[in-house]
Amino acid sequence: MLQASVQRLPHGLQIAVDATPLSRGETEPGSAKARSPLALLCGAAAAAAFASSARPALAETADTGAAPAPYTPEQASTSASSAYQVPAERRGLPKEVILYQYEVCPFCCKVKAFLDYHKIPYRTVEVSPLTKSELKWSAHRKVPVAVLDGEPLADSSAIISRLAAEVAPGPSGHSGVEAPSTASGKWAPWRRKGEAVAAPPDGAAAAQEEEERWRRWADERLVRLITVNIYRSMRESFQMFDYIADTGRFNLVEREATRVAGAMMMWGISGRMRKKYGITGDVRQELFAAGDEWVAALGNRSFMGGDTPNLADLAVFGVTRSVTCTDTFNELMHNTGIGPWYIRMIGVVGQSSRVSAS
Image 1 (cartoon, rainbow, N blue to C red):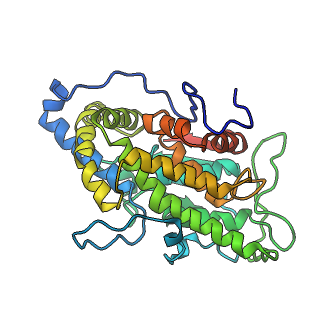
Image 2: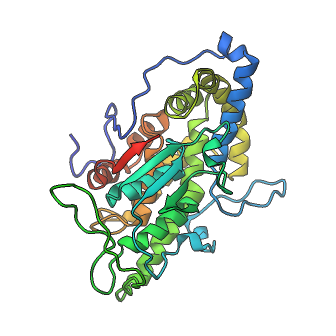
């Protein structure tokens, strides 16, 4: 059991949230499944789709032939994007939220963390990374795509910011949702369309700047570090694609193809991903440094938001939770001080508010 003074999780402690531990043996690259041309084709397509989902919807570093400079949190505050700005005017909390997603996509997991914490009911639709037929109606081909009362919205940060306006306190003191009744357990919106979000109290500007900066850090740094780590070795690449294949929308052939060809492809290009993302040195140590960087930013606070999580807490939590039960996740918990914060987040986020999945 964790003591308050313990800074790192003891080895052997497993934290599992919305995931099944990976106990299945790895598929050997030389097996018949790996040699199947159809498997290679399907797996490569799936790998490309999941690799695409690991890129934030922000401007990419220009390809000058040289690796970009190492990333620092301060750089995030210079990247202007309305996706991180919470709208000033309420539009009303949606009565229906449908999230088109990949179950293990870190950006999709960010949105789910926000919805789960605020207990906003939502449905998920798993998108096939091979055909994306579930998004044939949409101009946006990358997940997540949220449909809020029939209105589509893309980009995980934009989705969260849009919904954050509805749960923020208004001038009347009410948030966008009210407590669930004991009878139904369902959350109902305060229908106060047009009401402005309450002006921040004195001194809140610095807190809002910090929140936005670390939300960007989660997208621009943490996601990329986690991505190169889960594919850093053949073993870990197979481990991750075993999880992807089990949770994604695949038929039998596609599932087995994804396990083998997808894992091999992502392991093969992991070196290029490191260069593209400007990650130098040992990728595991870079990840550990990022974890401790987050903990240092927390200081003596329970959460970045103080006594309760803010949008930065939920973003970092969602991204981290996307790789639960991988070696990357377990070593991050064991080798950095992030574990106690993560356990607190599990407690406050609670059970999922997802009502159905298809």
